[in-house]
Image (tube, rainbow, N blue to C red):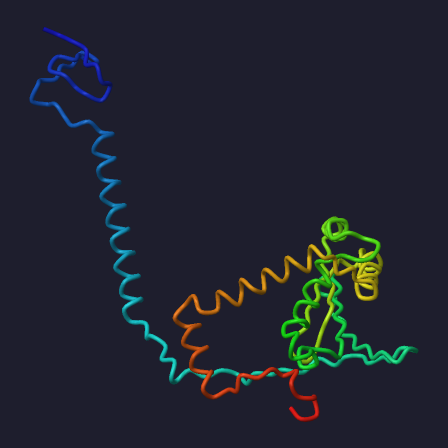
Length: 240
């Protein structure tokens, strides 16, 4: 019985080609299948060889010892500022940095908590906080915040132990408008009552939270025997 194989590469037992005939014993494996298996074996051998080579290189590399590492000397030069004295006697130090189009200005004021009366402890810090949050005589706190946020600018104020400062940061294109608000805040702060009350409550909550953690409790209690419980305002600055 003669028949034609379904697969073109498979030779059945009676497929007649050019007058010849083949027997069932003459069947051969599928050519494509054998070729794929051979290629797969070659690929696996190449991958295994690459992994072994990389592993050998990694194992043979020496780990750097931090005790024997050497570095080039660190060079740092203090930036030089330009010092200018204005007509009103104010000293201005300017340092140019053109990496970003941002302007930062800080005004320092000779004041601080060392000058506050003993019966008004915390007055300096309260003044520094409310000076910014209370707005100005011509602008409410909400209006001032809105104008600064619109320009992506910021103005901050604070008073420490021996110095007070007011600072601004803004884009170069918004310098004039931000500087106008900066001057208005420095010369005409409003100190609105509601913002003063809010700052007082925050200060009281901060004092109450000083002993809420073991670290703060330990630090506060260890200092008490060695530091007299006095206020800086009890002594004039010349005797401190």
